[in-house]
Each structure stands twice: as C-alpha cells, then as structure tokens.
Length: 393
Image (cartoon, rainbow, N blue to C red):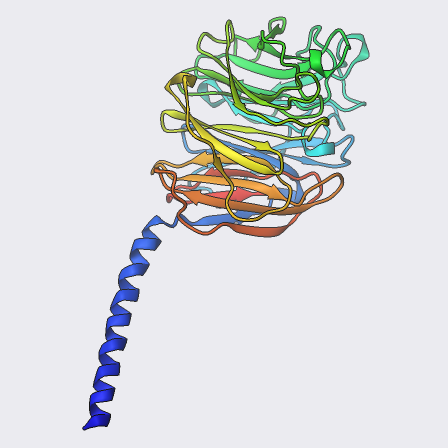
C-alpha cells in the first residue's frame, strides 16, 4: 500500500508539473517574435534595407575592393521566394567605399515607390566634387524600375567629406541628401551638417544649406542618418565634436521640408578621439525610432509628436564587447527589434546580436548573437509578413 501511495503521489506531481509547464509555454511563446538571420545576397556586405508601403523590401549592398567597390540593389515582394537579380547602382565602376563601415551607401523610398541611393565617392569616382574633392554621390531608380540613372554629385560647395552621408525621401517628392563637411577646412569642431534638397523626386538638387545652426561641430569620421516619416517630418541624427572632446549625439528635426530645424541633445559622451560610429532612424507606427552608440554600448529610443518628445533610452542587454552599428525597427504589432554588432574593429569582423521588445519596451526573449560578421560589415533588418523579423548581414 505504501508503494502504491508513493506512485500515486508521484503521478499527481508529474501531472501538475506538466500542466504548469504547458500553461507557461504559450504565454512566453505568444510574446516571442521569430527572428530569421539572412546572409546578404552574392556575398555582399553593408546591407541597408527599407520596406515600401506595398510591402516590397528594397535592399542595397556593397561588393568589391573596400576602397573602390560597387553598390547593388535587389528587391523582394511579399510573395517572392527570394530577392531579385542584382542591379548595379553606381554608373561609374568602383565609385563606392566600404572602409571603416561608416562611409557606405544608404537607401530611401520616396513618392510612388521610387528608390533613392546616396554614397560617399571613392578616389576614382566621377564626377568629382568642387575642386576635385570627394563627391557626395546620388542615383535614383528609373521610371521603369529596371536600372539606375546616371550617378551625380549633389555637393555644390560644402566639401570636406570624411564620415558617411545619408538620404531621405518623402511622399511629396522631396529628397534630401545629407552629409557633414567643412568648406573652410578648419577642423571637425567647425564642421556642419549640410542638406541638399530636391523637390522633384531627385531630378535636380538645390544648393546645400546648413542644418545645425548651433556650433556643435561634427565628428569627422562618424556616419550620420537621415529619415523622412509618413508625415514628411525630416530627422537627422549625428555625432557632434564640440571642443573636439564632446562627442554627443544630436537629433535635428524639421517639420517644414528642411527650411528650419529644431535641435535636441540625445546623449552625452566625452572622448578625445573619433569613435567611427553609425546611427539609425526608422518609423514604427506614428513614432520614429532612433539608435546610436555611446562609449561601448548601444541604445535606442522612441521619438513622438513630430520630434517633440524623446523617450527614455533603452540599452542593449547583457554583456558584450565593443557594441557598435545599431539598427532598430518595429512591426505592425508594436514589437521592436534592436540589433547591433559586437567585437568589430579596424579591419576586424565580429558578431551580430539582437533583442526583441514588446510594445511596452519589455524584452520578449533573451539576447541572441551570431558570429561570423565580415570585416566592415553592418546589419540591416526588416519586419516580415508574419509578424516576425529578418536580420540580414
């Protein structure tokens, strides 16, 4: 009888444990958004992705020698099994750079789904900038969507490129190519953020104007990011170089198509060197998401009300070495994917890492990482059609 009682007791415990285990799994699984890791097509690096209103994923990437390579474009529709055949973006071979991970091409999708790409030109790139300087190059997809038009330099006087530029486009036909430079050639503390604007979908560009009126400088070999949301608000995230030691992050916001900008301090960092950092902006619902590096950590925050309200920053969780090059995106359910690189350096690859958060900012899974990130590589991400996320590297 005692043996039978013991077995009965154990059976009850086992049944209760099974019920508790089964009850817990659905609750945690419901929060867990699947993340798929994808290698950049054709062995490329530095992918940059954006999803159009029609659900098409537009992707660019770099191939070739890191000092004189090419940028390629592919696309993938909601029903496509794979990306399309690559189209070269730069019309002059060898016009692009990958060195430092901060100078690569960036992509935007504007009115009627037209694709716009900007990049910092290589030493062999044509046309040159003023006085044979490094050009700020731009190309757009043709009307048929079959090839990119002839590349052109949009810089008219604000020379002094070092770190990378960016491009943004809105639904009204405005296209913005953004970079930092110093036409007076008197140091990074006197650099400015410059905006070259087109009001005809990139067909022609106006003479560039300074976006940051406050003399913050701009960190010479850091990238910056530009983004235009669904309402036409233009955001620019950049690293300052005030007194050559204040490497603070600033967010510029324009609600009048780059005529005026409001400037907000995002994060402070004192460093007497250039960290060669990149940053990121995307849209999630009615808010913008921004991501940046401070010291060896990366952060993201929400920007609401047309740039008037900045949330508390969220840092990447757990332990990691030299976290850099963040990207942050949201999906239709309000979940957020935060991804970044770890352990990268000059001519040194590393790993990619990520964390998913729910709409309340709570992590829905433990931080994950994958080794094998190539030299000079970055990570890009986009939401899939099933509520999950794809990371591409």
